Image (cartoon, rainbow, N blue to C red; front, side, top):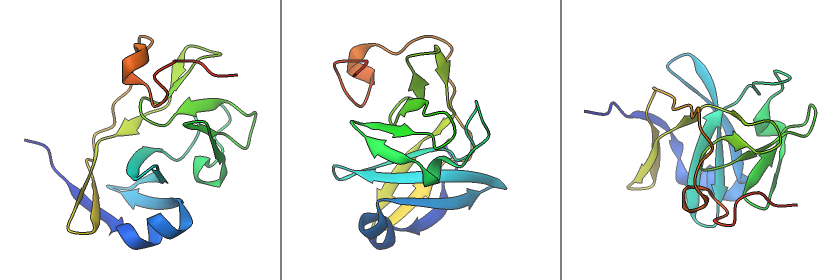
Length: 122
């Protein structure tokens, strides 16, 4: 059974579109895009920069360090075949909950698993 930890109310996230929270001692970046919430470990696997300070563009979060672009849904970065840890998220009664165990892919996600079904974007 999945453990869920209350992260925030949905209203501030809807307004700001991104928010850093701490879940079980880990900084997690939350993103609100097209009516859905996505959660990635806030510290980039490449340059240890805060992804919550990055730019959301075409379904990806662009790291402010060296501009690696992580898919919001899978955490995958096409250019380097690497994956940022992502966290399961659910929203109930106006509250965002995050599961404390991250998921990390070791294989490239299929197009239908990505935020942008077409896969890599230019």
